[in-house]
Figure 1 (cartoon, one colour):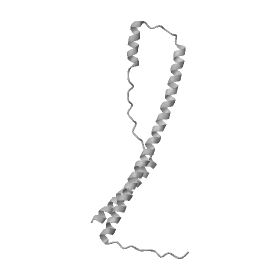
Figure 2: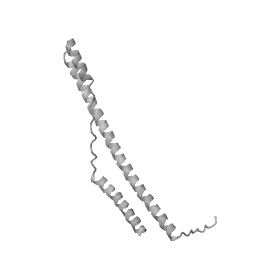
Figure 3: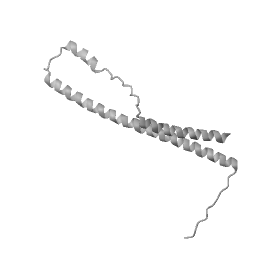
Figure 4: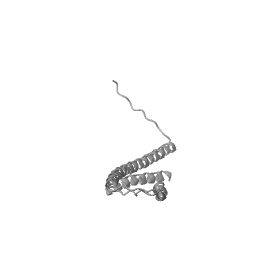
Length: 130
């Protein structure tokens, strides 16, 4: 196979400056996307852990409720009280507000690293505009 000679392309100064700005903007956006993806993964993991805990707690509550209903004696409720109990069965569940995410020191350092890279790119862009 023969040697390949490199091909050089010459850009005008303005065109090269614009290309460099565009490249830095793309790099900045990719870093922001990476940070967003990382935060999403952490939130998703926290969500799955919370769901697993809720499921376990719900199973325990159902087990305890079943034991309790089996242990308690069966009573007949008067017709007057049956209407009263039906009202309580139709009550909607309350919404639980989501917990705020707590970051570990390692996650904070990684986030600061990405944010510092974004700041560096912004400084380079400012220098190119001058």
